[in-house]
Image 1 (tube, helix red, strand yellow):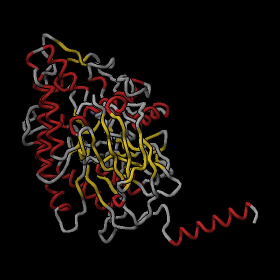
Image 2: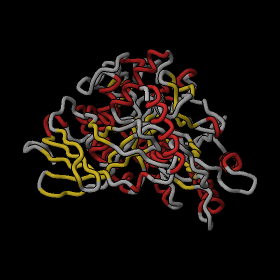
Image 3: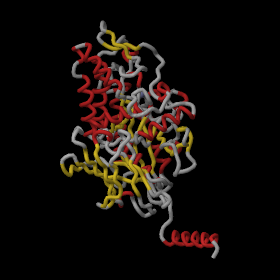
Image 4: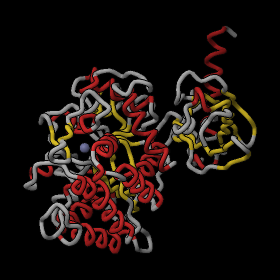
Length: 485
Ligand SMILES: [Zn+2]
């Protein structure tokens, strides 16, 4: 046979083999899942005290916005097994630290902020990255100015640049004044406390970038930091914060240079976008009880078929708000009872009774990261590997973690990449990483050029009948003598 005929014969054999066994990639027509993701932007605002009749951000206001209101929201959600995803600005933690150096009245605030995150994470809520570099005395974009006479912060200007649109470069992990470095700082500081993987992001002030060039900077920074999903589409162009999309158009793999457009492929994409939905958005801070309930009813109608079965696939209800803007009954900034807190409580009770606590639940409460991983597992046609949170200490300075390889992908993908725990700097803290499958070492890495590197390892294709949980990949991390434990 000629070389050409050999090729045709080989192709025919491959086709038969595929038909006989299973095909890649294929979406199974099983019943789908609807996840209800409660997001809020966990931050301060310098304008807040002014709106509320004050003229300065005092310790009391700060503490109410980022600690007491967040605790209160967590407490309400926990009654129904719901989980908040707190998009957390880390810069204000450093405002707190700065203020502690200026005034004894502010002492202990930094530790109290960290403890809030520890407490909420332990109860199952997610703390995710939300870069707002203009509330961060460590950056040149900082607009929070300490006023010694007022014993608090005032703002120096109204228009701000919070992330990519301020730094205008991808940069690297060692450069705080860059998109990748600032994001790395946020994710690392959060995960040092929570030790739970977080793979989602929302830009401060929706400043993901407007032009393709700006958006590629942001998308590259996300990718470098192991961030798999973003929540800014459309709002990044209008900066209104009120953008939203109809349920079935709000969650998708994006084009490689725009979060506002869908990718045509589930093999090549920029990131996963999960925009708040529907249009207008489900808003925990401004919707009435009737509006909140009605939007969830609409979601269930959109995501189920005529017989009431959930349509195949992974579906998101992505609610939106800011803890700082949720007002109690008396309308003062400090109230934590009544008002919108009661509305949220009654809304979650409604969802729990009608859709969650029933024989065949139609809605599951989930953090954004939990839902995003399931989305990838179902829809991605390229392998995406993530380290699991379960940590096993095998010996002194020797830890083991599971790895999940998400996606349904064919044999053209022979490799995936995974990152070690971000709270260690791989260059100085990690001596060696072994990657295993079923207990057998399949890859070894012992030279790291980055603090948070991607480590390649071979993967087997996944057929339509298999779940990512059928595979047994894991990672062993051997620390250096000098690594902090
Ligand atoms: Zn924000």
